[in-house]
Image (cartoon, rainbow, N blue to C red; front, side, top):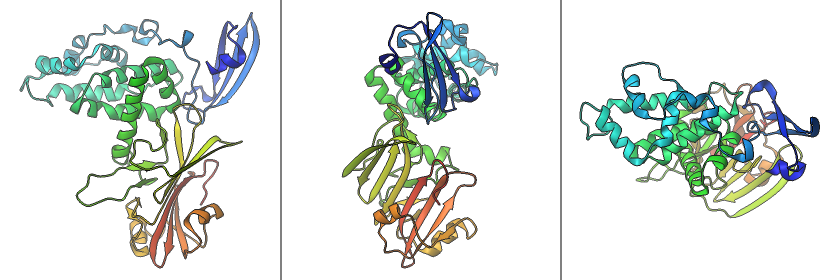
Length: 380
């Protein structure tokens, strides 16, 4: 719709070239065709992943015109085969989810849980859920419509579930979001009502908050966990990743101030101040919010198992002397926020990456933490 508003709707069709023939690649080249001639050209850097043009008039793609046409749409045609250890293709299995209701889960229990039909956790779910996890992300990254339909089917199953079933499906939503945030956001706008899309976005954000460090152990160090209070539930963390919701990203963080501006390299940038906490993020397309900087001070926020207020010795013991680089000073922007009254800092930067974890030291204690993605190259 945005492109039609600029190019006009009087065209026949378009061709799209995606760099590397992958929806994971950010850059796309689109040629608008009218009367057999190229009437317009668009070059796009999607930052978080490329998205090919939507289907005709933005309507959902029909499974009958895709690989999913092989499915009968009836889960009972495939559960016996799954339980018998036979292969059931993603394209056979996923369309069945479109027809799920809350009652479907009880029906599956009664039909396939031979141990105790009235108790949850029967062996059928231990077969079905791994199959759905494997099917969530397409092995055809060049075919964005294939992934869009996978987003649709898993989303339909989630909306028709509750309790343990919705908890089991939620990580698959996150996997699909992580694979291509721009495509997933587009899928929400195309296939679901406003209320349904908002529920799916909230579920993804909450799952990231509480489970990102479990499912992404190598990545979890580039996140900040809120102060942990005694006798209170685990507060969860914020990470240098893309979120489907704007600040506070399904977090209980107050917003004290907000500044939004545009840069030539990265487009719209937003900086939000909270309680001794600052978040900077990009908004490359509608519904995608990519955090690039997290800063915390004074209160006992923590990152990579180290909290503000911990000793320098415990920091060094946590990382080991070879992983941390000692800094005599931090950047001017960082000093403007943390203050200039510090002794030095330590930085950990991922190998061959752009993300850094910085610990500010004052009087032998950690007084501040910053996690930053330099995007074009590491900041530290």
